[in-house]
Length: 481
Ligand SMILES: [Zn+2]
Image (tube, rainbow, N blue to C red; front, side, top):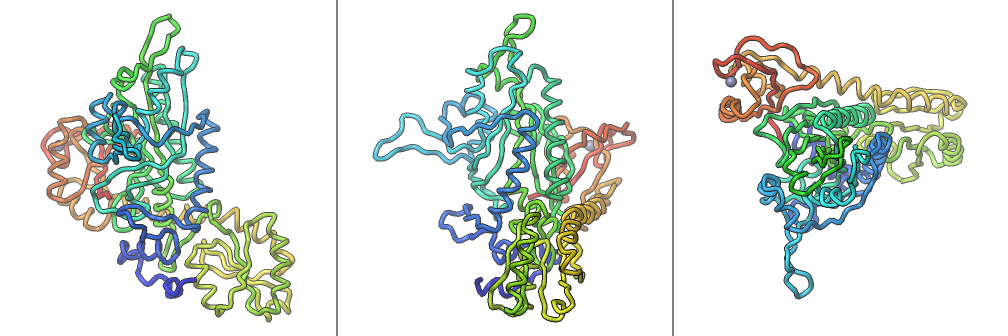
């Protein structure tokens, strides 16, 4: 263990969130930021082990819903990107280009994929023939590259990130919207119900769409500093794309028609950031049970108890992923270290307890110690394993729900945003003409209109919170990364 991590986390999560996050990344050894290309980082075992499990949950869920896995090349020819002009102009400033190989200049520059619509669609045009092939549902696990010009932050905003992208082709616009709703459900089932990250899924305003999409939907999670962070987004892609790539199918009536595309992008390395941020506390990490790199650690306080530690390990390793801490640190140091690393359960073996046939279990979900008999240890651990993530979710949901505030006008909005809340208000329009009011908010408060909720289609009455026009939608306003 390095000297650095012995100090523990010194910043307070709710007082100095930015410093807290940086310390957690470094002291818990999630990533090493010293790699010598700006915006790129080395992911370390403690984050990789958790993210491998996260990939697994997400991929299994997608496969269950009929998505088939692919591995596409990392490189995309410039001509593919040029086929759809809105997409190209949206991504051009962020693309890393390869222009030579060995000593030779390439005839055509190749892009390090910033996202892979233009790679998939070219192949879709070769693979899809008939309405019987639809829906055509794919996904790939990949790393993508974007030369983001904003300040980079590990996991939250880096120039290479690790994600899953799904690409689907459908018969009709209606089916495409159905897919978007399925993607939202997937996000809830995995990101919320397993990883414990609360979020709201918004339809983004027309001026804030994915380049080349007709409609964009995105999940926003919330950080303690009041800023939202965009998590998975799902898009209905404009038909200009299927026309540009000639993705056609023969319909039941024998006519050639262009497919309707959707894509969904859960970025695992960024979702990991929200897991850390949502559950972590002033002591450090707190992993949900399902994705903890190690679920239980046994700490024998005296070397005389090493044998007993082995025996307990054998008993419980059928139900948990467990290790024994044989290091020669003082017990207090060991306790702090494992609490910082976010291990769900720690079993402390002491001489006194041992004489009575007891062990002490520390559970990180409630930060509570309980003393149980050695005989009941398997039963206790299996009980905690069932409750653990539920406890984290309950707490996270409560914090999240308390951060949304209804406001009537820009004054109330400014106050709410200053307090680190998400403001909710009546608004004139999320079509093109609403942008003026969005700009007023941006200019005066530095916050953005994040969008409307599909599951909140109640009748809207009264006026826009910003202008005098009649309100047509309820929108949510927040600062973002
Ligand atoms: Zn307005």
